[in-house]
Each structure stands twice: as structure tokens, then as C-alpha cells.
Amino acid sequence: MNDDAVLFAVDIQFPDWGDRVANIPFVNATIYHHGHTVGWVYASNLKVTPQEKRISLYEVFHVANSDAMARLLIEAASSRRVAVNAQAKIALSGFGKYLPVADVSRNLDVVLPPPPNVNVTACDVVGPVVDMRRGGITAQANLKLGLPAFASANVSPIWLDFSYHGIVIAAAEVGPVSIYASGVGDLPVKVNVRQIETSAHEAALADMAIKASSGEGFELAVSGADPSRYDTAPLWLRRALRNITIPVRSDMFQLPHDVSLPIEDIVKSVAVDKLYGYWSAKDSFNPWAGVSAQVSIDIPNTTAADVKFEIESLVPNIQLLDEDQLPFATVDIPTTPIRVMQTGELQFVASCDYDRIGLSVIPGRELQFTRAMKRALSDRHVAIGVDGTLNVSMTTSIGQIHIEALPIATNIDWKFDRLEVAGGDSEMSNNKLAEIS
Image (cartoon, rainbow, N blue to C red; front, side, top):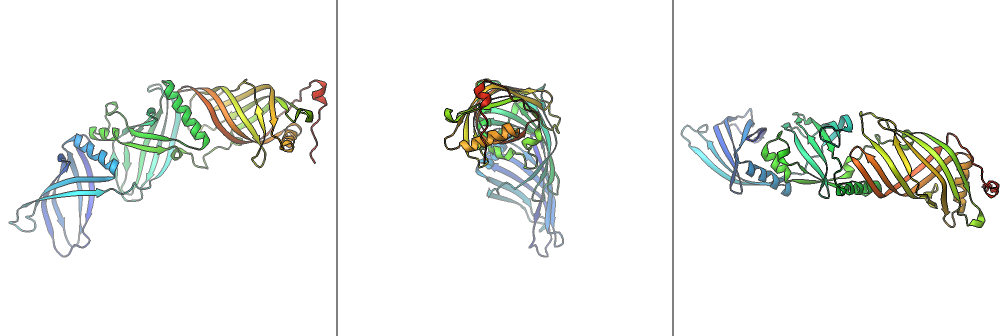
């Protein structure tokens, strides 16, 4: 496939063909779209017999007008139909020595079927890694395709842009596509997430993160890149793709369940330097606690990823949930942030040091709070639900991002490596945990 020609193969079946033999010396067909010539195809020495009731074509469609070809593809993609005029010259001498060349003209209006369900499996995933040539970060993979039909195709590489609210977030180099006669094929893909260049770009990424974290999801607009940016595909195809936009929902990119990583598999250790708390009935069960801790996180790096990701400031606004996922306390955390430092390719240490975290017990939920605190202080075991939002400032390989009110909902079930109970004034040290019957 190039600017001037498309090589194609097709089988035309004649299941009700009788005992006749048809010889067609040649067929010369021209396709028109809204009065403009798109292109033409010439086929010769066609034959249908009682034994071979089909014609197998392996021909070249010659593109005569790249603009008309592009308009035809754009209209087909937007309306899901193809409306053309086909004019053909067919030599009939194979049916009779003195029969003439016939001129045939027909208007065709074909409704395109819905896209087939394609089985896609990603393999050979590499990255993401910092892209020194294009900027940003780049990941690549080879997609194994399975079509529910016998088909074959070879398509040159194309470039696509992924946009969110009009801002290009990422670009992808897709192809070359190789689909074999069995319908099984290969599709190499390289995706480059762009460097953050403007405040609007940063705000778009933040909004995507918030919607993804809340479960709402988001929608990207996928279209062809500017035709001047690459030359690996025919000009008419590049022009058509530039004017075709396909909405893609974020849930299409979710990892399968068996690939996701439970938090207990990536949290390697929790070291608590100090943890203490105080409350009294005369203070309306509004206690406070102090904690200094470090959490080591190690994400398996199976794709040779090499990116920077550090959280400079993370300030939570959360409430605690019991085993029935009902809130029993709100948390008043000082503005001192949690920080996450990168110690390896996908290795991190999160640390916090809070002298006083206020806990406001929700009226009527005092018993649930006391149970949770007893488990934490006596058994060195935190088992609670967390629901709320995070204000996050982070530095990444694509730039700095600040996110306000990032939704968070998770369950924590941690055993502490060590626990040091801090001393205090007489009132603090003399207040014992309530016994739970």
C-alpha cells in the first residue's frame, strides 16, 4: 500500500453456478465518490467453471485522487456506510466470439457491519522509560490479534494522537499491522506520554487521575496525527485518519484482574518509630494520636521500567471505616505532608512524622473506635477502612503535577514490625485503654 496503489485479495463465490463456463478476458472498473474519481482496478483472464465456482482476485487498486480517497474513508468512518458509483468495462467475448465490451454503471450504497470483536493479548511489554529523543516517557508492546474470521492484511505504520479535552496527552506509533489468512496477526505499538508543557496540560492529567480514582472513568479522543509528522503511510490514509475521531473509554485500558497487584504484595515493610494516643470520656471522645513511620514499597519491575516518581507533598483528608465499611471517626491531620522518595527503579519509601493527629469520633460510634485503637496499640495491628481525598504534589519523568481532592478508598490491614510507646504527662500516661467485653 502506497500513495498510488492498494494491493488487495478477495474471493467472489458463485454457489448457484450451473454447468456453464464463463471466460472474461478483462474487467476495468472505476470508482467515483460524489462525482470525483477515486481510483480504478483492472483484472484479466477471469474464469468460472462448474468445478471452480469462484473468482479469486489478487489485484491492485490504483488511487487516482488522494483527496477523494481520503473523503471516502472519512465519510465511511463517520456514517458507517459506503456510497459510491462504480463504472466498469467488461469484455464479453469469452461468452461469444463477437460479443462486444459492455459498459456497466451501478450506484452502490453499502452499510458497513459493526467492527468485529478482536481478541487482543499484549506481550513483550517494555517500559515505560524516559524517552531522550521525543521527551516524555515511552512504552512499547506487541499485540497479538485474533479476528473472528479468515482475513489477511498488511498495513503500514500509522501515528495516532490521544487527546483529553483538546489537549494531546500521548502519541502512539501503531504498526505495521500483519494479519495472516487465519485471522491471527501482530501489531507492534509504541506509546509516548508527552512532557507536561502548560498548566492546562497539567490540569487535564489531574482531572483524568481524579476521575479514574473515583471510578467514574474518562474518555479520550483518538485521531490520526498531523500527516506532516510521518510518512510511513499513504498520504490519503494519513489525511483521512487526521479527520476521524474515535472516543475511547478509560476502562478499555484497565489491567486484567490477575495482573493487578494487591497492596500486601507491594508493601514490603512498615516500621513504626512511635505510635501513641490519648482520649477521655470527659473530652467527648475526641482523642488524638501521634505516629512516625516508614513504609517500604517495592513494585515488581517485569518490563524494565525506568521512570521518576516522587511525591513531595501528600495531605490526606480522610475518615476511618469499621469492618462493616461504616465511618466511626474523622481524621484531623496536620499540614505536615507524607513524602514518598524513590530509592530504586520501582522502589519507594513513604514516611510521615505527626506529633498530633486529631481523631473526631462520630457520635454513636465510640465502641467501634475503641476496638480499632485497642487493636492498634495492644496487638500492633491496624485493620480499618480509609475513605476520603488526597491533595498531592509530585515530580515525575513528564513534569510536576498537583492534584487537589484525589479520591481514595482502600482497606488497610498491617502488622507493625516494631512499636515504641512514647511517654507523656501524667494525664496521658494514666489513661488506659477501655476494656472491650
